[in-house]
Image 1: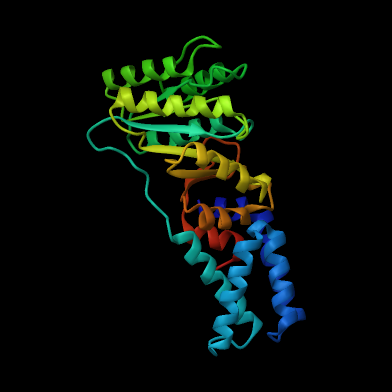
Image 2 (image 1 turned 120 degrees about the vertical axis):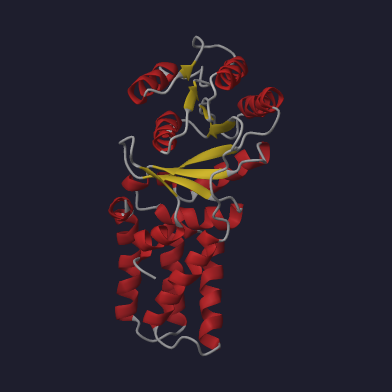
Length: 304
């Protein structure tokens, strides 16, 4: 799996680590020019202006304290500072021991929710848990059939209604069925929605309320899926989703293997204060893993 992480982050590592190594060669002395170049590299690596400035300022403080003398040491310290960021809110999956756990998946159109649900379901099933899918995306043409195909392939039951049905009604049926069958984790698909579409965001709130009413508690996990290829544009979308659904518990970063913008995970974790729970590193159903900070840092910046 470590090789899969390294391969998945190959483009991001070339984008960030390659330029940092080049900076060390051309600027062996720590000075204002070094800081300016470092800041530019970080900002243009999708780490964002705010987080980049804070990282550079932290490095300056280390230099002033006499703890760092060479640019090579500064880059090593940068790795440690970024690791501290991505570790600060790393949390395990929430799974109830004695009752049904509900996982709700939300995000914009085209982020890969249905495929990611299959990946998460497959991963949890391999750990011995009984899984069920809910085809709550009744809007997108083919979404229900797509989830059914995954369910048949993975031998995971799927609860669905016809296209155009009320998603809340499908979720109600799914919760009842999951409880009756002794399911451990119910994974709920939802239609993709742009964060600026008020009626669709209100629908998510309704779905959340239905789950709480029928299951007697909040979903154990509400996952916001982020397309890693969107880079810093993901921040505004994520903030809008959080404003409407404040109880989001975790992020899932999709399509990391196809982008050089993996650095976007750093400001998302720091500024949103929501942990990344899963990362998707390919199109295969097995190309998913729980987020591990140390693997992430090694993937984009080499070993600490």
